[in-house]
Image (cartoon, rainbow, N blue to C red; front, side, top):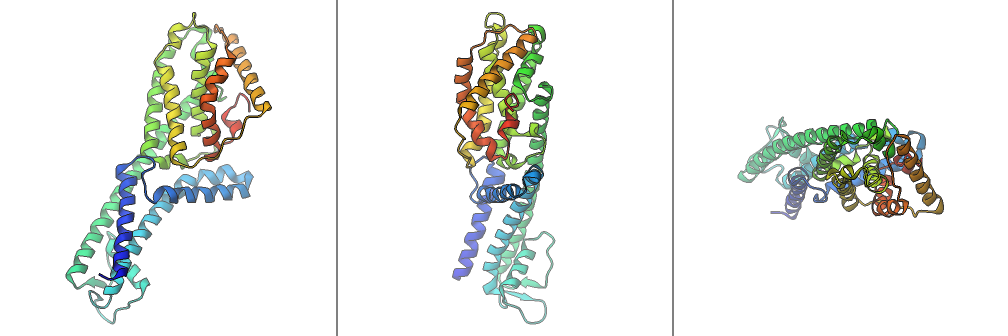
Length: 354
């Protein structure tokens, strides 16, 4: 085997391993090449968005679909180049055209390799040695298998995306379109009656767990961004984290002891954090901007506004801003790292301060 052919075999093995880890092994942070390629395309689109701030939301909304196309092209080119390196030394001997003289340049090798990997097939060149016949057979099996796997993968990604959007829209509707967790809490317990909120929070916790696992299986989902802020993973997570923090630090513990003690409350908080940590651990995030005096004052003003809103809704409260701030400091740094990484405006995430 020539050095060129050995290199081609190594390239094909690396790309096949990358496809296996991305599509079949299916968990965040395990791909060899795909995660780096996806981040490269994402950064290019973010840079393009910075050149035109007015059109930035529209540009970033194309990121997910463009990354999907770019990833498929990347895998196809990698496999084709690897196969071409194996085939080129055999042009004119082990691989020959049906008539005429064989071309031995690399472009011809690429065309032959592409035809051997394609399920359509075709082309004038065919194998005339045992080794090349086996290679062409393997290439046809690889091409058909990879196409089937990628199509199945895309169906799962878009199905998970739809479920995430349903959850995000449901949460936004529960806030009355405001993105304010205090408004959501007031609607969950009108007049201080939280008897119907148990099933609502349980359903949210179940849907959030499914969304978190979908992003763990298909990290490509993080790059799907919509122009509407309420579809963002950052805002969805922020609203639910803020909701659980308000429940634990604002509601009167005697009056609403049963509601505060619901298992769904810590489940929502932990699952929302796990969703953000999945991205934070597997995709390089930005350093969170330090909180200035204006930020701290904004948090306190937002908390006071939340307490007022709950009292106006007839909900008994025992505010504890110190505990609210302490709990919020546990998860807000994640939001401040993940939000800008995903192209989200922090003022759109925290609507009570925005």
